[in-house]
Length: 524
Image 1 (tube, rainbow, N blue to C red):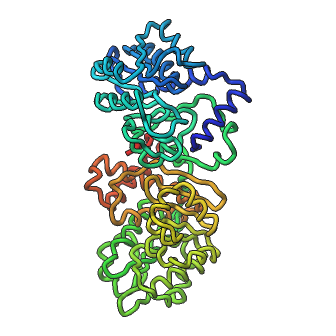
Image 2 (image 1 turned 120 degrees about the horizontal axis):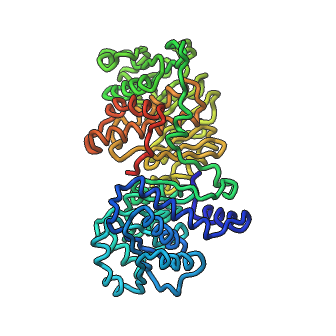
Image 3 (image 1 turned 45 degrees about the vertical axis):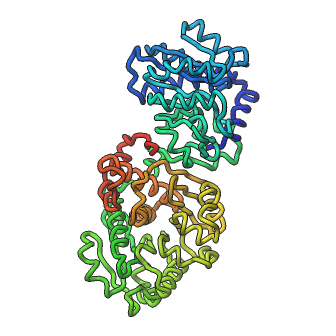
């Protein structure tokens, strides 16, 4: 599940009021989970000082509980309360008192002048835990809380955030001036939208989710349609080939694209399709471009289609190659297709006539600019893989509006066009016509390079050809694509990453996924 602040607060209330779970119990689970998750992610040297910076609400209470568990793990612990102890209420007040019984040093910091007197504690800390503000906090950082965030940042110490970094909006991902940048965020019960949406995602560092006993049934019904892909959920989708499989059993992919100057795109899509496990990949290109394309193809084959005098695709190929198209298990339309009107007419005809599932990308999508309603007029399943600019053209919205509505807009478009919509970006969002939404946590900024989308098209085309339904194929394709990008960036760095590197690292990504050893995707 993936939730907003309001949905999480509703689930908290339901668990406390309807299920009878005391706030103290939830807080104890959260604090213990925070300490244990930190211990598993951060190399804590026993005896080094751990500073917990706590607010006056329940998030601060979670930090106070964690302080006791850090001490039990062998840590030297201090707690700074940003406020007066007499201002504490409920479970937070109880856990402040428990710090005294646990013989943990605790200090009240009423204002910025008092905080300055504790500056040395930040400077000597081996780890700082941000437990200032919780999921419900919104708006600018002010007063002693803002000063504490500044002191935390200036300390340079590794930082772990309780639930989410202070200053990040749990619903929108908006980051206020001075917002904390954590190395690890340990969130409770379910990840929040703000953990996934930029710039919040960049402030979270690695993300760990701790179960504190709030059941899915406590969430509003609307919340249950949002999901974050995980290594286990992605691995469960991947199709396994039978021991007796031959190349015809694991998918025949046709890739329609290519134009003068853009032959690398369909070649990359074909390489990615084959590396993702299809049995046969064929690139369908204008006949006059074959000599230039041939050196780029080894395992893939080529089909020579009719062309205009400018060597662009023509709509005549739709009838000329009808039998060939009936023999494929999926069709990818768009990589390197170009902007020739005849090529665009072919793209529209293929979407309307194909009996096999279609992945529509790049100029295949642009062929429907001003004609988006035609996307619903077809018989076969369809996956659209636009970036923000392409979806803006299809919907006639400003790019800024598309980005602002990254979680909601793909779902609206999927319903309108009766197609799966995969909106590429940070994060990639996959939406089904029935309202389900999956958010992909893998990938990094190094993948912002020409040809990256073509590799994704090839991966999704293979998964469709191997029998996955469009929503699962798009979801798994996005995860594998981003995971390969993360492996490539770890090895090569983000700045030097190119699209062919994604293909190179696809085997490692898939093998790791299938061995169930895939680590939680790092937030970059």
